[in-house]
Image 1: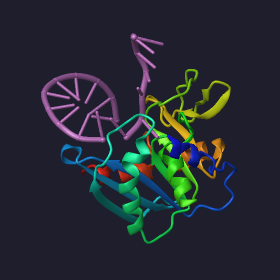
Image 2: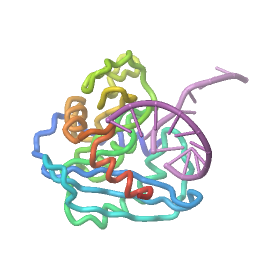
Image 3: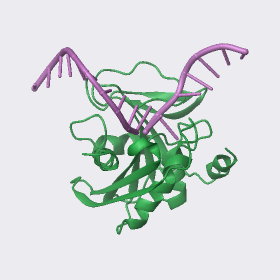
Amino acid sequence: MAEQRRLAASVRHAPMMAEVRLVAGIDAGFPRHRSVTRAAVVAMTYPDLAVAERAVAEVPTTMPYIPGLLSFRELPAILEALAQLTAEPDLFLCDGQGIAHPRRVGIATHLGVLLDTPSIGVAKSRLIGTYDEVGAERGDWQPLMDGIERIGTVLRTRQGVKPVFVSPGHCCDHDDAVNWTMRCLSRFRLPEPIRAADRLASNR
DNA sequence: GCGACAG
DNA sequence: ATCTTGTCGC
């Protein structure tokens, strides 16, 4: 937690200005008894969303899952996979929270700060925060709040499915987080880069 | 002391 | 996250 408080001081949120040509999805899986962590990175061109490069890495699991400390469990494998990547993505989409975290350093933020690259957290469920019911249409959203502070957005990415929890990771703002999530969507609940990384990290 | 709790 | 059986919709 002390490390997270230190990282929090380096986080920047300002509207993204640089153009995005390559978006990378990040995810991790735990094959056979969780003793191994497998991370996957899939870089896609934008706006075509065509796979440009992929990387997978496996490392021994060293930490249990502890709510609020997820990045320390998954980042070692993720950094290993990123080291194998030839290209340098302009933006990272991570499976998990950005600043929608007790100390504002979810896995997307942690990764973004380490790489000093724009990143966005797209989580399938809530870690912290309160929000009002979200409209049923694709694109409908509600701010995710922690007291008086806005920490993210609860976004309906598709009609008839549970909304996702989007939050800025590093070097972007709430609008960027929502806009880039929407731009990387096809016909499913999660953005294409994350879906691709998800499949690579698990199996199939 | 009692719940809540990304993946 | 992972496991596992069954059901729903296109």
